[in-house]
Length: 313
Image (cartoon, rainbow, N blue to C red; front, side, top):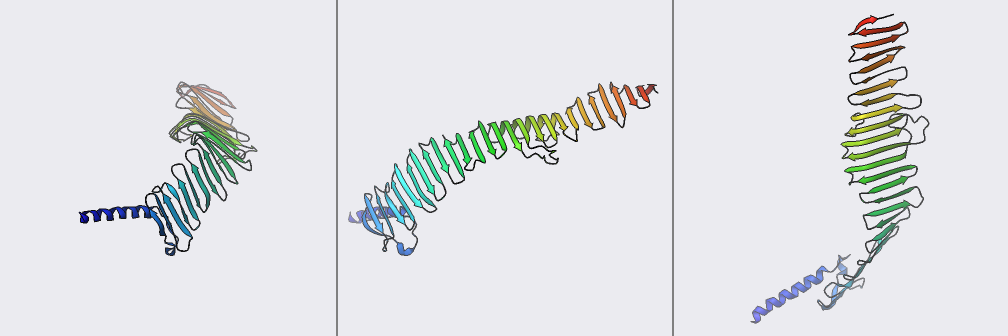
């Protein structure tokens, strides 16, 4: 009987020692190894290092207690309250679920009831309501601000530039995307004295299909309908017109309409019914797949049927 009882007592003592050891933090030096002064688990355990710089006590297994080691400290009364101090964080306190605070040398974070909170730094202030549902932030110098509602809208102003997004699905689909106050120059064209540019896109899905696009950048204005793979050339309808000293026109409604105009020359057609070419003081109009055409030149007009002239100067 005694032989049976002794292993059980040794096993229980080993389990208690293991539990007490798991609650101790990592020590800075082996010389700071703690020694128990009170050991009555699970009611109370107290231990400290010989030099007194490190100590720990726990009650009710681990629910109530304190650990102190070098510059780190941890106090707790679970599940209601705990407090941590560990550089670079000066303080972390939680009164669950009513209040949370974290302080560092250059920032403060506070949340109340998991409904409202903020992060305050010397450069930026960020607020949250029902995070991540609603948030807003602004720079202390007034050059930047942003606010949004999760999956509903987001607006951002950076200096003179403003960006607005309505109905977004984590970047996979966007209902409306507006950019205003962009730099006046386009990617490859001059600014022509303009102070800013703007872009608008509506109903974009995975960058594969965009229902509507509008760019007013540099020396051009571009309107697009049903654009594929974010390529301006793969648009069902496109009107690309130049501004200022270069009033070019590039527009089409695929596949029934095309219009290309440059200063002094150009061409256009509407399906198989009508087409036009002009340049160098001459002009040709044709109808019905070219069965009938008229050529205007300084020396006079020429009419053709089936390519054969029937009226000429």
